[in-house]
Image 1 (cartoon, rainbow over the protein chains, first blue to last red):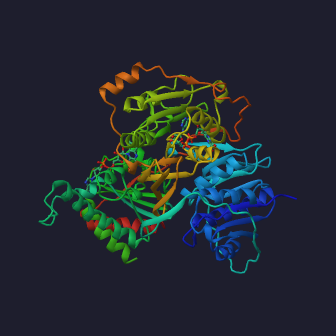
Image 2 (image 1 turned 90 degrees about the vertical axis):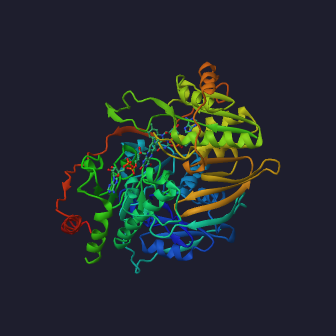
Image 3 (image 1 turned 120 degrees about the vertical axis):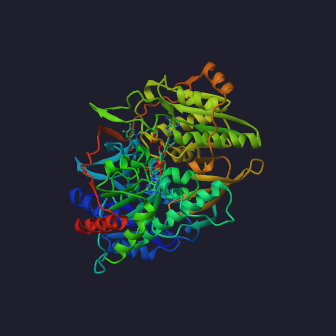
Length: 342
Length: 260
Ligand SMILES: Cc1cc2nc3c(=O)[nH]c(=O)nc-3n(C[C@H](O)[C@H](O)[C@H](O)COP(=O)(O)OP(=O)(O)OC[C@H]3O[C@@H](n4cnc5c(N)ncnc54)[C@H](O)[C@@H]3O)c2cc1C
Ligand SMILES: Cc1cc2nc3c(=O)[nH]c(=O)nc-3n(C[C@H](O)[C@H](O)[C@H](O)COP(=O)(O)OP(=O)(O)OC[C@H]3O[C@@H](n4cnc5c(N)ncnc54)[C@H](O)[C@@H]3O)c2cc1C
């Protein structure tokens, strides 16, 4: 009998990452070619609900390990648990996140097997998975496979695989698993402000601003801001306000170029590009961004790219589907208005 | 503090990389210290400046892969060691982490081992955590700030950047950290530093030096490198006399193409 295909469900503060369900969907497709059932793994303090959801999203069974010490993800105890549950598996899938990068890495060491991170496509040949993952920040792609060692551990990039529709009529076994839980050596001492709004990696729409957001000489900063640098930041914030309003109307997230981040216009967590986040939304609107190769590396796989730029020769227009030559301060407000009414 | 920083040599990120006959080419772009590792080296140097100690840069690569180590020395690392052996070519992170862990043990008694967040070429971002697992040290990745460091008490507290926001974590030393660019501003090597580095003889450690005698074979294979499908876009410029008119037309075209 074919072995189960395991999927680790990554979650944060009680909610599964959408990419966890995408991984369940991808596991279902694999089960069709490799055989076997899809088994979801849930580890945390209180994950019974998530286990039920995993069934609705397509798992045949859901194995969960619960303990108060597992409230915050820590790679060491979580990896030991997952390695025990999946020690016999052929395939272990996870969504890609900061947590699963550590989890996959450690389970790989524990089970002496390979890890393929950030997979965007999968196929099977001779019972092994042939995966495709971006290298050189997406400038190239590599086919990657784990011919002998098992399980094959793959983390799947957000939005690379379709998210299944949940079906509340699906049924499956939800089992608590008893395993020894080691005491974590690290302690989570706090969370900073979590960014409000949609996460960049999961967003279907992203509106991004660049250095151009500060280029609005007609706007007069308040009199109490006298420092030139502060005035520039204030100007850029007016630009990012327009960007945020458009993003809100589209239910999307706000991105930025590195130049905007480095100049202090917006926090680094918004940076898109080679040294920021790699995103793949349905719609990416770049306003006041020139289109440097390192920025393109982070968004080139967006389905539709719209560029708004003053300079008709800006390189960003080469990758865009739609281009508007114009000042973002003039174009964004009527665009937001127009889309509000649709 | 005994600090080890692991660095990789990579092509410059501005390079146009292409694939020709299955081989990656980056034209005449220079090979440099992996940009993320500059932050790791800088953090190591700042910690040393505050707490004293010594910083060792380690790199695994072919014999001529000295550039990243020279740059680390020029920035101020005390010593640099290249780990090189024909048997180490083409390894995956599972095996690279084994070799690096052995080299770190040979350097001896580290308090901190620093990594970049990922390499800009093969970009797996998992090597540091695997080294941590092998050494039995806690793994703290994506660190944006060292909140406190108490070498005598053997404790460290850091702030990390998760997708969801910032998180503070405390743990014991020795520990493995990977750093993101928010953590610091890497220094430029000084003139003296560059001179010193250019003269430095970088020792090379082989598998035998590390006591690695078993055959290392990669679990992960990468049989083919391909160019991404060309994105066939013909940009459609939205024309109009005023910004309002352009905005209206753009919204209309997005709706017609069912983008929104
Ligand atoms: C190792 C390395 C890693 C990097 N990683 C990244 C990364 O992850 N992400 C990233 O983005 N960059 C990255 N960069 C930086 C990159 O090379 C560019 O410098 C950066 O992307 C430029 O940002 P920008 O387009 O906002 O600014 P600029 O290049 O200055 O472009 C501003 C654009 O705004 C337009 N503009 C000005 N005013 C207006 C206005 N009022 N209305 C409309 N348009 C206007 C201008 O015509 C111009 O095209 C990296 C660089 C290096 C060396
Ligand atoms: C096309 C291609 C695809 C690959 N795909 C995979 C794969 O899917 N899975 C897999 O396990 N391996 C893969 N590898 C192998 C992997 O790239 C190497 O094992 C590499 O040495 C370490 O991985 P990395 O470059 O991804 O480093 P990362 O894990 O991204 O690097 C993180 C940090 O580790 C340190 N570091 C990394 N490499 C070295 C080094 N050589 N010396 C010193 N410090 C270092 C640096 O501090 C770096 O910032 C692939 C290689 C190629 C060429």
